[in-house]
Length: 459
Image (cartoon, rainbow, N blue to C red):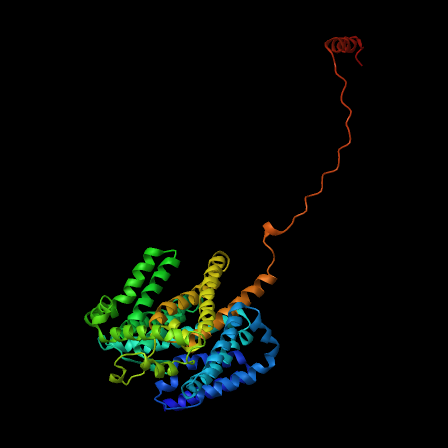
C-alpha cells in the first residue's frame, strides 16, 4: 500500500514536471533527500530516474537559460571540478571500483547544474529552500519523534541511500537543520510555521540520538551561529536550550560516554582506527597526490590495506574519515583546491550577501544565512567523514549559484539609491527690478512742510 502511494506521487510529479519543470525539479530533490521509497520498504526502483527524465523533458524549452550556468562563480567552479575528477577516473588502476560511483555522480551533477536554469525567480527559489527544509526535516521528524516517544534511543543506522548509517544521517540532518530553522520566517500561514518549528525541534533530537560526534559538534557550531545572527540573543539562547534539553536528558548517560571519547581517542576502538587510517593516508600522499587513486572512495578502500598494518584483521570498508583528504587521495590536488574554493567562497559570499540584505530585505538575508549555516555545518562535519560524492551538498552549492544570479539580476533592475543619483540644482530665481529709494527727509524740510500745511486754509 505504501509503495502504491509513493508510485502515485512519483507519477503525478513526473506528469506535472513535463509541463512545469520547476515542479519536477522540486520533486526530484524531495525524493532524493526524503527517500519515501525506503520508508515504504521498497527495494531497488527507478523512481528517481523517472523524475529526472521528466525534468529533462520539461526543461528542454528553457535551453536559453543555460547561460545562467556561466554567470556565477559557483557553478563555474563546479564545472571545473568535473575535469580533475574525470582524469582520476580515466587514470585509475581500479576501474571496476570507480565507474559504479562516477556514473551516479555524473548524473547528479547534470541535475544540479539544471537548478539555475529552471529555478529562475525568487518565488521559485523560496520553494526550493522550503523543499529542502521539508525533505530533511521530515527525516528528522521520523527519527526524532520516534526516539523521544520511546524514551530516548541510540540510532546506529540511517534512513538509507546517502544517509545509510548514523554518521551520514547526522551529517545530512546538520545540513538540513538551518533550512528548517529559517523556513519558519519564510512562510506566512501559522500551521506552516508550526510545522517547520516542530521539524527543527525533532531534527535536533534526531542528531543527538545518532550519537555521531561529528554531527553533534557541527550542530553545536550551528547553534552558535543562530545565536550570533540573532538580534534577540537572550531569547534565542533560551530557545536553543529548550530545544536540545529533552533529547539530551533522555540520552544523557550514553551521550556523555560517547562524547567523552573525544578527550582520549586512542582508547576508543572507532577513534583509534580513524587515527591509524589517517597515518596510512599520509603515507599514500607521496604516490597519489597528483591525480589520486580514483573517484568515489571505493578504489581508496582497496589500496589502503597496502599502507595499513594488520589490515587483514578487518573486513569492513575503510575510508579516510576526512572529506578534504578523501577528495585529495581520490582525485588529486587540483580537485581538492577547486572543491575547497567552491565551498569556502560560497560561505564567504553568502555571509556578505546576508549582511547586505538584512536592512533592505530581511527574508532574503534569512535565505542567505540558511545556506551559509548549512555549509558551515557541513565543513566541520565532513572533516570527520568522507562525503566526496554527496549529492545534497552539490545541490546546495548549485542553489548558491542560483541565488547569486537572482541577486545580480535584481540589482540590475533596481533604481539607484538617492545618494547615487545626480540631482540638478534648482533654477535661480529671477532678478528683482530695482526699486527707487525714497528721498531722505531732514528735520528742516519736515518743519517747513508742517508749516505750509498749517497755513493752508481748511475746506
